[in-house]
Image (cartoon, rainbow, N blue to C red; front, top):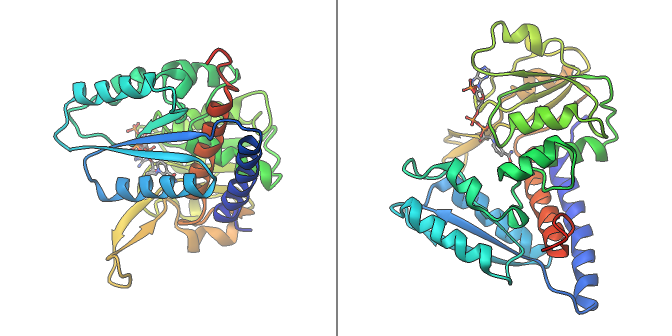
Length: 294
Ligand code: NDP
């Protein structure tokens, strides 16, 4: 069965719009999300545009702040300081990846935790690990919601996550192991130094592929009946599309789908759920739900 991220994301966006309309009707403040985009990487432009569009559909205010590719780390930190102190903005994101001369760690630490709707600040990562109220990182949060909305039982299941990046694989492994729902999995976290990867993936009841290698996961690596979540998005050249490229996931969909009980497509799986999560986090920020003292 296909896990339809596009559909679930639309449902969530409609639910958010109702809540935003209710806030406005009560004379409350319209949630406001800002995004900083440094440079003009094609994929990042697409992601940011999709986020801005989703904000508008959900009734939010959105602001896109552009800095040139040549902007220094200090320029970005100054802009972030402005946003940290701007009371009209509830939450903001700094679109990754950043140009090489800017430290992503430094940037994650510079965002005010109460405005960190991407959930990248170390304080929010710690709160996530401890199952305290926080902004969950958007992509792993989107996957949790997909599992929840399709009522997939995760307790006691063996979840294998491939990839340990700080924005996807690592937080995903923590979230799946937490004593909550969805969660309570026995988790194995694999990465590029894992020996005999296939031996692990073959044992997964839930397999989450987040390694960024197109169509890497093939049917022989997957257990019959597994739930397969494909996070990967790689642009591959194609002469069949107008844009000149097609999007490929980390899973060879045609090969793996017949074996999987549930599987996410690319596009239309995890990607739209990432956007829905960002909107939920922004709504929470607007309401001061995570940091009450805001
Ligand atoms: P990173 O490149 O930051 O991390 C990749 C991870 O995969 C690393 O931990 C790396 O190991 C591991 N890895 C690489 N090759 C192998 C291998 N052969 N076997 C096992 N592990 C391997 O990627 P991200 O986590 O940022 O992104 C992963 C993919 O997800 C990308 O395609 C990205 O575009 C996509 N993505 C999609 C999103 C969405 O909304 N759907 C959001 C974010 C990302 P090591 O640590 O040892 O280097």
